Amino acid sequence: MKQRVVVQAVLKSGDRVLLLRRSQGRPSIVGKYELPGGTIDDDEQPEDALKRHLSNDTGLTVKNLQLQDVLSMNNREEGDIQHVFIVYFSDKPVSEESVRLGRSYDQYEWKQISQIDQKILRDSAQVILGVYGQLSESSSGIIPRSNDEKNTTNLLRVIIYSDGGSRGNPGKSASAFVIMNSDREILDKGGEYIGIANNNQAEYQGVLLGLERALELGYEDIEYRIDSMLVVNQLKGLYTIKNRELWPIYERVNDLVAKFKSVKFTHIPRELNHAADALVNKLLDEHENERP
Image (cartoon, rainbow, N blue to C red; front, top):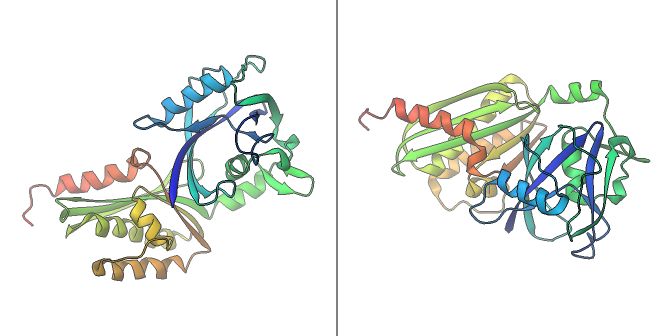
């Protein structure tokens, strides 16, 4: 399956969010509204790519962009292409009259969440705005969720970042995980030095450790974010496991997954997995001088 990495911005002015209407592109997207952003060029950093798209498509310069989330979806608009959305947020006041549209758009609107009609949005905008709990579907369109509903839902829903590394592959290896809530606050973290192993074994051990801890803490809905495309696609069932050494831990992971209400595995770029990666390297540094 092909993969495309896209940056998107949720820009707010007061209680309004900026939407752009497509005038060019595939027939399925022309006339639809989307969030500002676009694809990342080779060797381009996500935030630099977003600033480029904002300048070209809106004429805006936004300095206080905050990384909000990384999402993955198979876009029904484009068949077998898996999209990874790197989402940034800014609530710094923006002049609503200062937008200058690029050639791909013919209209823009600053819309209150409660006034957005689901039918005018591209799939990606529906998913991104919905994930933050800002939108939920109703017969009359899209409306905000109440604070009580968000608080109740978020108590049992978490994001887990995990990583594993081997110095030598195979060589001295360690695995780690970080559990966060939807506000990106760290709820728990941990890891262990696992001795001599290869990179894939260390990656799987990180997944296992995170799931075991999440189960102990009573979380029910898990979004797992991993920077190994191989491991993510194996856990999704898209790739088969040819290495017999991975089968035991793969089966243990699947047994644990079955104990949760839902578990979603998402691939993210390595630079967005720095918290778990830092724990792995700390463990490896602590055992650097030990004999195998």
